Image 1 (cartoon, one colour):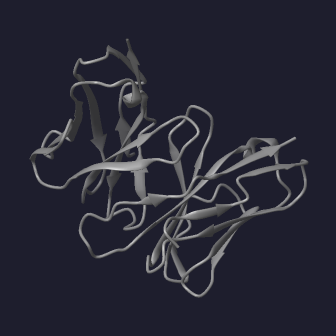
Image 2 (cartoon, rainbow over the protein chains, first blue to last red; image 1 turned 180 degrees about the vertical axis):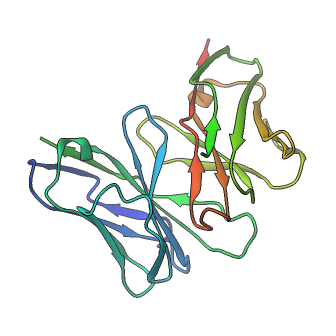
Image 3 (tube, helix red, strand yellow; image 1 turned 60 degrees about the vertical axis):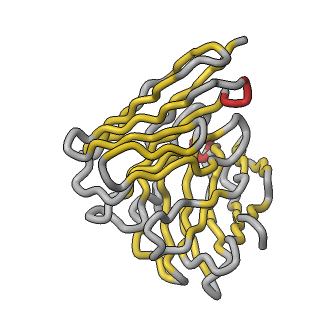
Length: 115
Length: 112
């Protein structure tokens, strides 16, 4: 696609429910990143994919968080048994490694609200 | 530990110049990036420095000193639309090639 696409744009859920967030990166971008941004805060790294593998999962806050990427394209971030502290904007970004200036292209994010 | 520090907020008037400083302490370095983020929107790329010196791009310039762990973003001829948060990010390949570490952002408020 023309840009990074994320869905849903907004998600309201009840505490304890599972949620799935989707990211469709720019076509041809092999690197994909998930970040989390709480209100008024900077970006918190969650996980990074190169192709379908995740060399760095160090930012996932707990074992309730998982992510996968299939076909080197679409990625889903799953949060199980959501908690109120999971409320944030979840941003996905993609890039094409090996170009030196590997700037990130961000999607518009998913605003997650856990009631 | 690894830190990226930048001021929380800066205010300037339309037409003026503002300089946003960013200092970093990381175990490795392979590039410093500046992003602009308007409220409720995704961050967008502004500039990239990997060697010491000044990179100029229209009204925006970015400077890097690797020995000092220091960068700044210079915004000239400020316009109202420049009101946004400006994020400094460092790529640290010794930590993780894929992990861009972001500062908390500097909120720039442009007044008439």
